[in-house]
Amino acid sequence: MTQGALSRRMTGHVEFTLDLIDQICEATGISFTYITTGIKETPASPDGPDGGLSGSAPSRARTYDLRIKSP
Image (cartoon, rainbow, N blue to C red; front, top):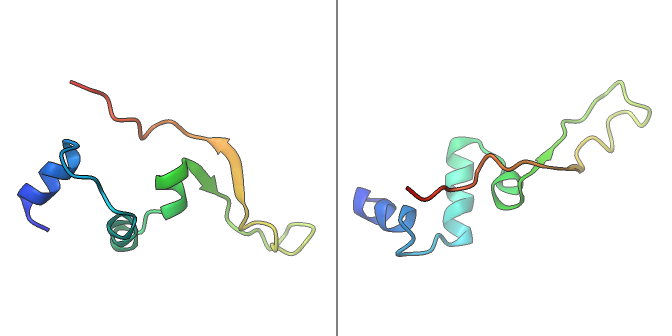
């Protein structure tokens, strides 16, 4: 992606597609679920009562650190 293409998306002139967001998340190792919903997924815990089976379910705690503030 060129700098101009990224700039147009970051300034809101062109929308990010879900496919592009998915590609960016894959390349950076950031959770797609976290970026699109703000819900942090909890890691599986092998010491838990179910052997870590429910650990992959997303938590309901919302985070608001990704809000874009206008200059």
